[in-house]
Length: 390
Image (cartoon, rainbow, N blue to C red; front, side):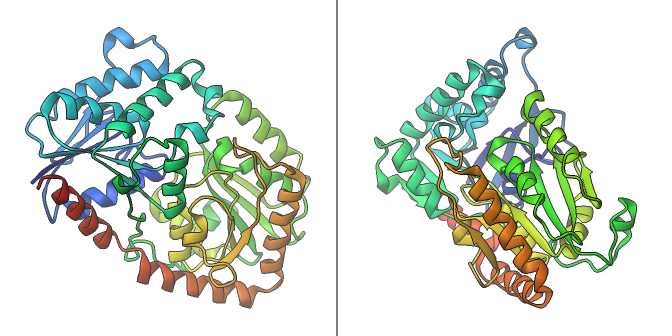
């Protein structure tokens, strides 16, 4: 069986969970099928991987139109595939057109949904209507939809009630626990000036409304004074949110704040996660959140928002602590001050009990190993492909 995986992201150009997902799904599926990866950006050296750039005539167009231009070229190249499998709205239109053009099944994995990310209008302007149309059209006509969590499945059926529930299958994201393993070395901490003898709280994610970094920075004003704060945060959606985060960081008024804005190599992230006292995921929208699994695999306790698929990953009171959120349709907390206070309370609870935090970290790794294997993800995905060809 030939499977064409379609995505904006693929290593080394990875900036979010969808790119991580593609990296490992492709690796495992190659053991089971003929896999071709089609992605955006610069040429890749990896066999079976083709990259596509924005067509010259769309160089000055709205970003959403540029995406559709790339998608058309990707769709044309899918001739000969038995199944096309797209990831995120950036590639959904390519999968939809390939289905129509080549008469093959189209599978969509939903890592997020445009109707639940209205802040994207800040980034795309009128292109947000185009991205929403592309996603809605692709999902409505897809042969199968994979949701990365049960929470994501509920969101799909709520946002797109016309989709047959029988078409929507839950296949969780995975984690490579042979790669994400505690690293007791400390050279990366020293490189960035982090004091290994003081506890620190870490955030890893993009600077976007979805990831809730602004709420974390409000919460950090109340973190225990001995705690350091490490922010592995880059790729801001807009200049406005970058300016807002910059002002909040400068206004914290505490020492031991480290903002690393560049994309770090994976080994550096693993070492930083390993030595953290607490990993914080303050997302207001998170269908699953692979980064929580990455922290758990590194034996780090997690404090995360009880939203989307996160409660399916983080076992409250066992591998970390969940933070309740009362939020509107756009994900914004109805009471941001309460949400920030609850974040701070749970972070401080683990900072005050390091033995408890370490026990949660060990339990987190056990949970990651036992429940979230990429080999299982690939096998279930291949079985789904096979069911569409009968």
